[in-house]
Amino acid sequence: MVLSTLADGLARSLETVTDTVTAPFSDPVIRLGVTGLSRAGKTVFITSLVANLMDRGRMPQLVPAANGAIRSAYLQPQPDDTIPRFPFEDHLAKLTAPQPSWPEGTRRISELRLSLRVQPTGFLAGVTGPRTVHIDIVDYPGEWLLDLGLLEKSYAEWSHETLARMEGRSVALAARDAIHSAKGAEPHDEPTAGALAASFTAYLNAARKEGFSDLSPGRFLLPGDLEGSPVLTFAPLPEIDRAPRGSLYREFERRFESYKNKIVKPFFKDHFARIDRQIVLVDVLGAIHNGPRAVEDLRTAMADILAAFRPGRNAWLTRLLGGKRVDKILFAATKADHLHHSQHAKLTAITQALLREAKDRADFAGAHTSAMSIAALRTTTEDSVQHDGATIDVVRGQLLSDGRQAAFYPGALPDDPAHLLAPARAGDEKWLDADYSVMNFAPAPLTLRPGDGPPHIRMDRVAQFLLGDRL
Image (cartoon, rainbow, N blue to C red; front, top):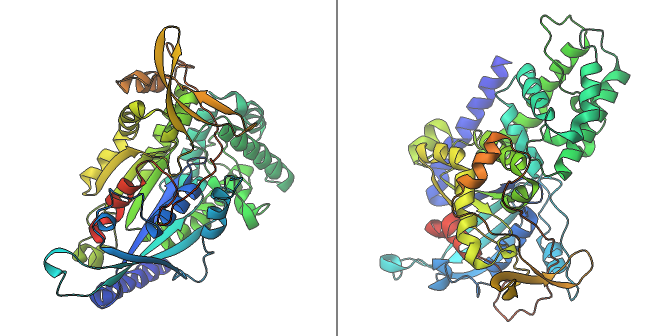
């Protein structure tokens, strides 16, 4: 185990040295990770970002697009031949069809390479010709993100934390009863193990529907080809002092470690740890709607996830000696089009407060971080209506459920984020003096002018923050 770890570290160090030495003689590459939890909108985000980088008429805040430095953009085969290609064309066709529909969410890792032909500006404009900058966008299920927090935990620690969270959730009742009825010290048998794993998996799926975020192990939710394998057949158990060999507890402990070594670590080393820039998409509005416990669960989940980042400045010496580090991280609250623009600043402030712990850790390590409210695809228009003698700012859109046009007011977000975070930390069941709603809107039919990408909110600012300095 030690020799394999040393060999792997040596191989990665040599790869880093090679990248550093050859970088000045090759086209620059920006490896952009797109992450987030379920329903945060990763697939639509990537589709909109690529479409708006190819047709830049709606990107005035992306400086290289506004000043004409980006001459052209085109798609190329991604460099990783073993990773499926992100089906950009299929997703864009669904969003821009006469009867548009939402594309399916991410269920596996995929990658897309967008190449930009950029003409240097300023002093170098007349000295050098256009250069090519490759943007490798890596998309993977948000559920897999949850597993990064397992790397530093033992089976006993994970079981204790998971069972503690299950205590406060009604959807966990059946799984909790099955787990506490199990006799972990008795000899392991596969039917018992399978039944416990199935009950625990059913709980994870139910908790996700209830809006909870911290639902590890993530592959239990999206097993793929691993469904039914021993590496996905375990569950948390109350700790047992000196559990005997061959017992159910010891077998679950072994499978938990196998899950980390064979599933989580290879993904982290092969994909996650190679990221240059990172965007973390967060469905803050959905968490607020689901109540204080969902908000607190989201806060702790994001803190655990971001503990796995290695943020810092990507100086060449740092790369040579210690590997690449993420040097820019953007926290984006999605679905800003569900709010009137007068509330966008409040949503951004809540997002900043919600992620304060994780953001401060990244800032302290030297990474440049920011937060904003965005909509990768704008589905609504803004309006004002009279209600009980007052004027209310609303948004109008087509309901996903029945296709009707409706005006929607989600509730007034507080000016002070502490009004949400304090009851969330206290474990309150519901908001005492407010009611927050969410609505599922269908994508609106589009009529795009030549040179325009899909309508959005602040995607140009997203691109400027993540990519602008490298273009």
